[in-house]
View 1: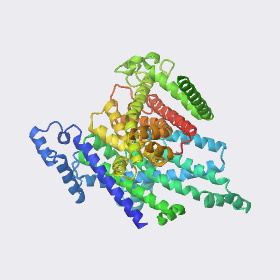
View 2: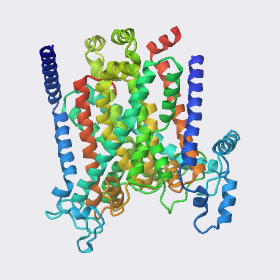
View 3: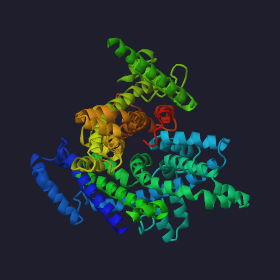
View 4: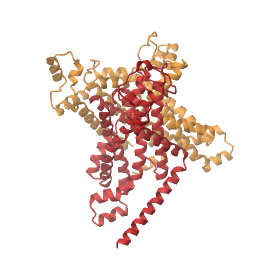
Length: 339
Length: 298
């Protein structure tokens, strides 16, 4: 097991190194003057030259990469030319908001997806199964930003049920930052009503992110349930007169856990990239909106850091998922042990 | 001799026709896939003939008519008009043109290198060639394509051509990995061994022996990917990194119209539904092909 984790870790590190080279290459080779972009069009040529020297843009690619890499080892990702702050400070401020959103979306997609999957599988070929199939087809085909706009249109503008901008209303003072998660921070500060408002703000963006995953997880669970419904062990339990709820949760749901966990890794990457658009629509002050803004402003240091953060998260989640599956699935566990 | 060849040819043609008919029979068993195909054909022809069949072809470009701005849907303007008086229906049909063009260009640029690299890596599995190719592939797959596409287009001047280029640059690794899986499993099959023993050239083995076995999964993946590429293109133009105004692009139209919700809902909701429709159609057709080819996973 340790050997397996070590191998995967080494592989991930190699891939991340390659990714940093790739994104660095994209950022430096493509035409356009980042120094000029950072200073604005009013800066004099002298100032731009000075900035170029400061950003090491006048040196060859390898030297630039060396400076950047040694900085990375010291925990320094450079300064953002857009916010004029160290990139690490920016990331620390914006990542929690996105993490809160993504975790909440994962929670929604897992629970709703499992429940619909179980119901659709257990009552297969019923009207509910048909409806859930239709919704899952639509869910997979609808871009998250379209879902976001439709949700805002219906639930925020027509029905006035949920807010559509930011994490909190402007009039409400945000609770002191402890975890960076607005809902948790409000609860820690003992302000339950603020936590509820924050939760309400979280609802629409999280659902827009979650919809496609609800659809996918629902399909996976349904397939697994249908596959096992006719197996002998289920018939035996039925004959023994086990309650339906126990039959479903203890015996039918278990085989579907492994494929569900397996897709979480991929899901996470998609949640991250879909957050890029959903955060724009909801003006969510998170990492993804920061990423898009800095990219649009040709902010090189921030852009490289953003892509790397996503690469690192993706690699870590996938590693975790692989380890989890090894624990969950006895056949894989034995295979790995056997060599 | 010639007679024999001709008889051979006729026999193969007959076989091909039969298998095509069989495939179509299998495909047509699924009403949803047939529906998807019909929708696709409709979208494709109307997009292709857009300048001739849309009610106001001039509205696809830089056209303004403030007297008819912000009109709700009516018989005159099926999907209403946008904030500067252009017919939304016309622009949606023209928008399909660019979406489909994007999909076709990206896939035709991206698939070929991916397939060739995958074939080579799969055939030379276990050598340094495979390691180099597959590790580079891993690097490209280390972040979601939307993120890299955003980064690349943001560095370039935002326009349709650069968006196509950026997405195409990111698309080969998926095909490389797909073909690699098939090729490396076929490498030790008897027909490949036999060709090697007969002294067939490497190109013959890769392209005439192994490649035909990869066609089914490649085709299926391409159909499903059309939807994904169109989605990606719409996302880029939604952010403002795709085709620039006044080019009618579905993503841009959604972004523009969203500012005018809920009053002028038609100028954003219809383009949004148009995106969903075309992606849905490609997904349905892709699912149908998957059943026909009995491809397990793509």
